[in-house]
Image (tube, rainbow, N blue to C red; front, top):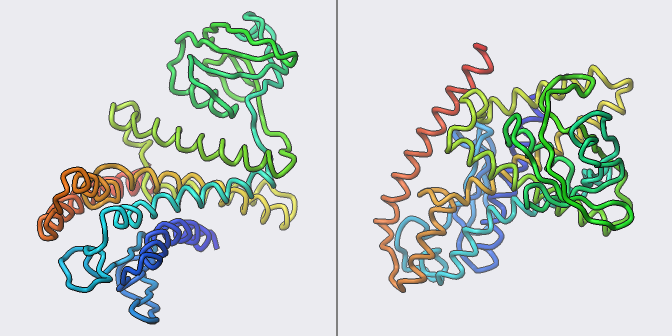
Length: 354
C-alpha cells in the first residue's frame, strides 16, 4: 500500500508538469504526438486525434512529445514553426504548472492543518532571546535583513547560519512597536534534543478565512522555493554531505518511514488516513516545487536550458538550427543521466547499506 501512495505522489507531480506543456501546446495549436507518464515499455495506450496517450512501466519521469520539437517540419502546427514567444510559453508551462500545483495543495494543507506565522509563543527563560528582551507574542519580521513570514524560516535560517554566529532580528510587538536585537545562539535543550538555539518557540495555528488561506498558501510556496534554492546553493558550495542528497529512492524511503510512523502513532484508522493524506500533500508540495526549480536550471535538455536558447534566439533574431539544438540537448541529456546515476547510486547506498 505504501509503495502505491509513493508512486501516486510522483505520478501526480510529473503529470501536472507534463500537462502544463501539453495544454499550452494544444491552446496554441501545436500537434502533440505523444503524452506519456512514466518511462520504459508502455502498459496502457490509447489514441485520440493526433495524440497517443501512454502510461509506462517505470514510475519515474514522463514527456510531452510535440511535432517539430527536435527537427524541422513543414507542418504549420509543428512546434518549430511557432513564434519564439509561443515556444517559450510552452516550455515554461511545465515548471509554472508545478508551482500552481504546489499553491493549490498548500491551500488544502493550510485549511486542514493550519499555518505557522512568525509569532513567538514561548521564550525560554535564561535563553539568548529572553536576555535580549524578546517576549511571547512578538512577531519576527526580518532575520539579518531578510524578510520572513513563516516561523519555519527562522528554523531554516538557524540550521544554515552556523552554530554560534550572531543573528540580528527585527521584531514587532503586539502594540505595533518595531525593534531590533542581536542574539547569539547557545547550546541548550528544547526538551527533546540539545543544540545551538536562541530559545524561542513558534508553531501552527488555525488559519481562518479564505483570505488567510490564500495568503499563507503563497507564503508556503515562497518558503519551499526559498528552501529549495538554499539547498541547491549548499550542494554547489559543498555545504552538505553526499548522504544528505536524495533521489527518488531516497525520498521514497523517507516517505515510507513517515507513513509507518503515522500508522504507529495514530489511535484510529480514520486519524491515520487523515494524517497520511496531509503528509503526502506536504510531500507533493515540496517535490513539485523542487521539480519546478530544477527544470528551470539553465542546463541543456532541461526546460531551463531550452528557455535559455529561446531567449538567445529572441535577442539575436536568429533561429538556432534544429540539428544543432538537438546535439546540445543530447549532451545535456547525457549529463543529466550521469547525475541521475550518481544520485541513484547514492540512494541505494544510503537506503540499503547504511
